[in-house]
Amino acid sequence: MAGRSHQQLRFWALIVLALVATVIAGGHLWKRQLPERLRQAFRAGDLLACMHYSEQLTALQWLNPEPPRELALCRRAMALRHWQNGDPAAALALQQDLINSSSEQDLLQQQDQRQLLRWRNELLSKAMSAFKTGEIDAAIRLLEPLDAKDATAGGKLSDQWRESWERNRLEHQRLQRLVKQESWWEALGSLNRLDHPWWQQQTASIRKEVEAAIASIDNRPEHTSHGDGPTHTVPELELNAAVNQRIEQGMEAWSAFEAACTALGGRVVEAGPETICQR
Image (cartoon, rainbow, N blue to C red; front, top):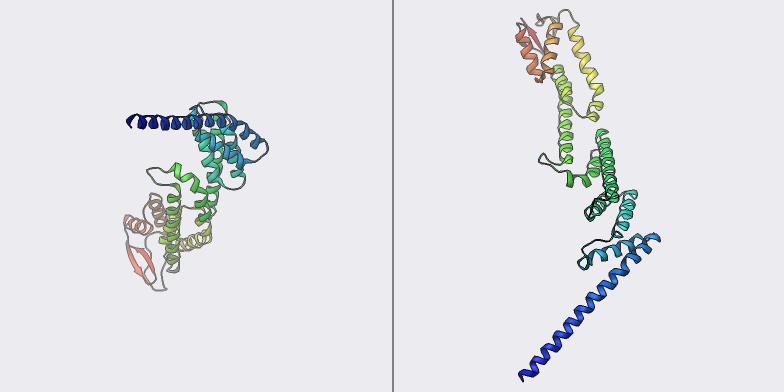
């Protein structure tokens, strides 16, 4: 009985070994055929079939650790098709896979690396252009394929752009309130804090209005808020120069006005709707 069981075990073991040998032999045979099928699909322009054969070749790498050069044919062509069809995320991902799958630093790999860099730079340039012209949503979408790789300790570039946009938007709202209140010095400081090209362009007319209002005050030999109201006894030109100097040094507009007034021997006086520097 024991001898019969032993024979059965040997029988099944031989069957398993035969199946394994068949699978390995079939894998080798199919692996030898795949490169030619891949080339035929590539020459026919059937990139989907080409990619399918490429994936099968990759799956059979365990039979031969050295990746065949045919693997790069379809990935390179498909990456270019994705880019031309307006799918930069897929193009960049496939191009990066193409580079990572190469086992040696040959001429083709160097060309692939340069292509990847050109695409990334082109995408960043488009995103930057959209950001500067106020198309914040389009700019963020263009950045998405780049963010995953370029994220640093300082945060993704898209996060930095969102923060910049929101900061300028809120400053613009504050500027409008200051202009409505005719708080010209504070409005000038608010204008100087706008650091985004689109918001600076949007507020160009407001800047002219603010600068004209300040100039009209400076050009008066003696400024009063009303006919018989308090008088600026600090020379306007000196006060204006002192305020601008402090603003350029990074001081807030109102703090700059107070500091300049004090430095010139005056004191800040509320005179109706306006504020004056009086000795």
